[in-house]
Length: 77
Image (tube, rainbow, N blue to C red; front, side, top):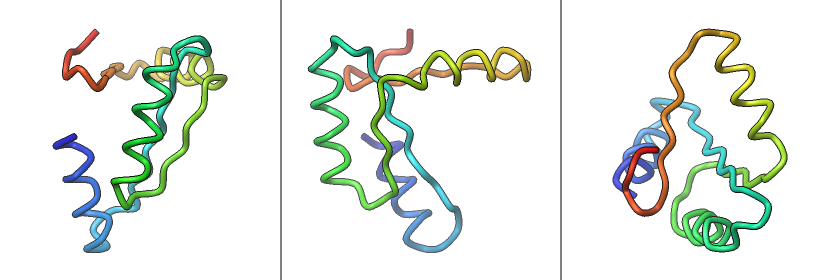
C-alpha cells in the first residue's frame, strides 16, 4: 500500500504518469478483490486483468528486465 500511496502522490503532483497494472490468476478471487479495493482507494489510473500476465512476463524476459511481483501480503515471490 505504501508504494501505491507514493505513486498517487507523484501522480497528483504531475511528477509522473503512473498507471497500476494489477494482474491476477483467473481463479484467484482474493487478489482480484484486493485489486478492486486498491483501485477504489488510490487515485491513480488502474487496470485489472487476468489475461495479460503471460505477455507481460514474456516481454520482460525478452527485454532482460527484472520482474518484481508485489502482492497484498507484502511478500515478494
